[in-house]
Length: 269
Length: 296
Image 1: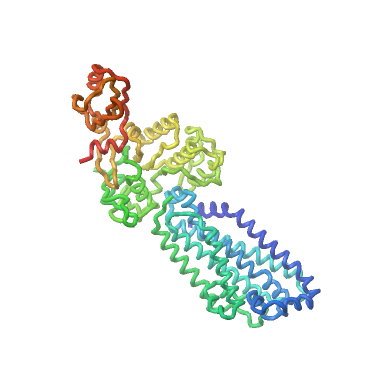
Image 2: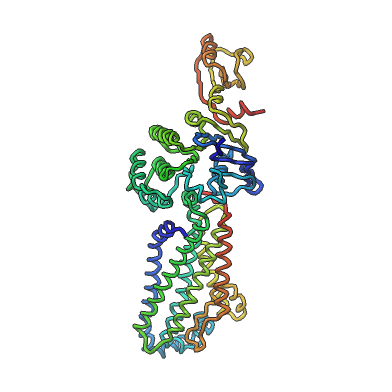
C-alpha cells in the first residue's frame, strides 16, 4: 500500500463520507424519535399494521407485530434495511469510481507514471474503500445504538444488534466488491455511478418482490439482500455460517478478479 | 559500448484486430535528444504508453536503462519523467497541492525548493486551483511535475501543445540545460519544425511502423519545401524545367504547386525571369514529406 496515495484518496472522499454519515444518522434519529409515540399508541398502530399484507412486513424482518414493540425490532424494521440500501449505494458508488475515476478524469497518466506498482495502487484504493465503508458503518451503528439507549423501554440484545450491524457491513462490502469488479471491466472509461446505484436498487427490488410474492420466493436468492437476516427479535437469531461464507466468499472472489484484471488492464485516458 | 537508455525490440500492439504499432525497433543512447515524429494515429503515443506501462504490448519487448518496462516499472519510474499529451490533473487540488503530491512519491529532499524554482521559471502561480488554469498553464504544471525528481530520462508526448512561443523557448532552454547535465530526452511530436530544431536524431513513424531513423542533419540537407506560384501567363507543367521539382499540380487559374528539394537560390533565380502574381513557400506537412520521401 502507498501511504501518499491512501491519504490523498481519504482526503478526496472525506466530504462525501461526512454527508452520507449525516444523512443516515439523521434518518436513524428521526425514525427512532417516533418509537415512544409508537409505544404509547401501540394498539392503534398494530391494528393499522394488521391491514398490511404479511409479506410486505416480512421483508423488513417483521414476522410478528410484537416484534415492533421491542426497541431492537423497531430499529431493525425501520432503519436497518435502509441502512443496508443506502450504505450499499455509498459503497458501490465509491468502489465503482475509485479506480475508474482516474481514467475518465484523465489523471491515470499521472498516477501510473509515478514509481508505484499497480498492486500498490489497487491495495491503496481498496484500503480507502474499506476505511470509508467501515467508518460509515461504525458511525451509523453507533448512532443507532445511542438512539436505542435513549428511547428504549426495556433491555435489548447487544449480541443481536452486533449481528445486525455485521450483516449491514458485510452487505456493504459485497456491493463494494461488485462495484470494483464492474469498474475494472470497463474498457473505455466513463462514469458508471447511475448504473451502480441502479444495480443496488434492482437487487433490493428483487429481494422485496421475493418476500411479498409467494411465487417469486426463489428469485430472491439472486439478491445479496436475501442473505442479510434482519429478524433480530427472533430468539434464535444468529449469524448464519453459510450466509457469512457467501458474503466473504463472493467479496473475496470479486476483489481477487478485479485485482487480476487491473494488473493487466490497458489504461486509456 | 554503453547499454542504451531505451531499447525496443520487435514491439507490437494490437487493439483487437486493429493495428497500433508493428515490430518497432528503436535504440536510444544515454544523453541523446531523440525525436519521434509521425502524423496523428501513427503509433507514437502507443509506443510511449507501453514504455510507461500504461498499456501492455501484444509482442516484443521494451527496456529502459536495462530494465523491463513491465516487470521493473517501479524502479524505472524512479528515474523517468513523463509529460503526457493531455495535460489533465486533479481538478480539486491547487497547483501546489498537486506538485507536492507528485513529489512525495520520490525520495527527494529538496522537493519544495524544486517546486519553487520551476514554478518561478515558468511563471506559474502555485496557489491557483488546477480547474481554473488555462490549457497553457496546465501544460506548465505537467512539465514541472515531470522534472521535480530530476529524472535521468524524460519522455515527452506532444509537450508544447498549448504553450505560447515565449514559454516554448523557456521550456526548450531548460531541456537543453538538463540534457547537458546528462538527461536523455525522448521527444514525440507531429511538428517537424520543433523536432528539427531540438533533436539530434529522429525516428519517423507512420502506420504503426518506423519507416526511417535518421540524423537531423541529413533530414535538414533535404530541405523539402512546398511551393505554390501564381503566374500572370499560362504556364504548362512541362515547361517547368528546373531540377529538384516534383509532384507538380496545376491549380485554378495559372497556379502551380510543387515540392522542391533543391537549392532555394536556384528556384528564386528561375522565378525572377517569370511574371509572378503570388508566391508562397512553406513547410510541407508531415504527410507530404512522407509521400515525397517514402512513397516507394
